[in-house]
Length: 613
Image (cartoon, rainbow, N blue to C red; front, side, top):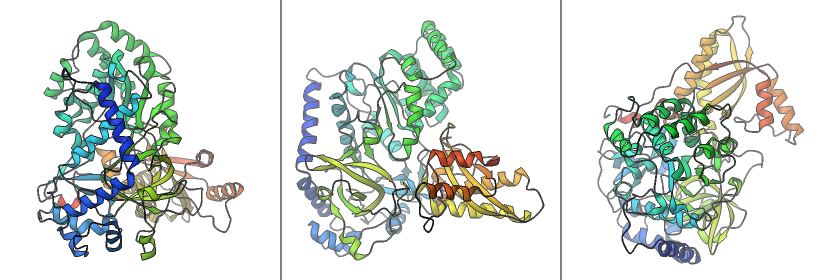
């Protein structure tokens, strides 16, 4: 995730970049050296300022701010536990339910509950805390890549749709909240964060116009670009595919110094025209590069001074690493920070490491962190099932930040300034090492997630229910589903879900292709709102595909798994596959393929607010 971009206002006479970096690095040194003391103070501050809120009072904390009483008194919770309180706030209850500070807005998570996005309460001052974490990134980076203050970053940043709750609070993704805040829009000078995209292009709600204008500005300033990126790897690859499709229009704009007529947003046109001047020579250069048969290394060809690609490639985003390597000629792939809607967590202090070795140092001032030990059932699957509710013993097993053990996996639990108390984030982390007394974590996975293309997260239960709804279309033809699995196919851009179906045919009536297409659409309609938004609004996910495979395919799959050492007694069909030889086996036995014929339905906001939108 890129750091907060800053304005290219002129520096003041006393601006000292070296001193600023030194202070920032010293801050990291201090808080990691005194991690436990800082954590203790953070918890005390959160509990003392919120001593009289309803949530803490009804659980009998009685104003205590010490760790021992807090852990003994407060339960470890999931979103479902806190949802009734969130619903009250969303419906207009302004009493201090979760926080003594007014809830300023809701941040919509990419995780879902009941098919709808989770809503995280936040308070105004959290924007300052997020800004602080952003401000750590470039001083860290500058230790590894000098001279980044001498050029620009080309980042593709976008806002997403937002909704209003019945009580009048805005509900929107965390980055949309940040980009629309004064912290972003009225930022002070910082030479490290000089960006090719004007604010207006980032804040344009039309995704096509936003992408087009950001790409145009990035191309025109190509020699000044020292680093490129987006939030997720999938988003950056989408930008390259957009260029592949629209480079002729973009070249025409650069040649003539005008903007294509499809860009109708007046503020975007004005912002871009302040940058754009006719440059036929540059247009010829871009045209020559984009016309070549191969797009291998296109990033270093068009932006020759680029030193690294700044995108998230941990967790499910690792599936995009080969594509990024292809387009960037193997430039370093840098993951700078770890954050979520609930809270911003930490930074990568060794940003030029390999993607597989990325570890994040949690910054102890951001929130109060606890860790629930996780045991894997086996080492084969990357989806880790964690119990939904914890018994008393499991509640006692949570450990503090400085007490985690090297190599152990944990689920992250946070207590935040904005009203979450012992909240299970759902991320599984492994302790990779320590910076002074603060642990460094590899991000392993989001618990229970089986499919993910972009910011969507589909779990096994949801997939099972969606498939169950779809197979009803097969009943009139005497067909039933014998077995199935799924795969997140990222060889297409955008990526899409593939379901492999083995059927039992009891009737003689052939099944028309339209029936399988109906099955595809029914599955999509049954999936969560984040998936459907990716399909309808963001265009970050392609149409779902069903591949019907030959009878006996799943027996072959079992034989293959057993040949690799799986126990015949414990084997069960995986509901999602990632291992390339297994995907190849399934594809080699596919007899037909069908795609969803149209987008599923999606509306901004929650279903229960649909009358308010």
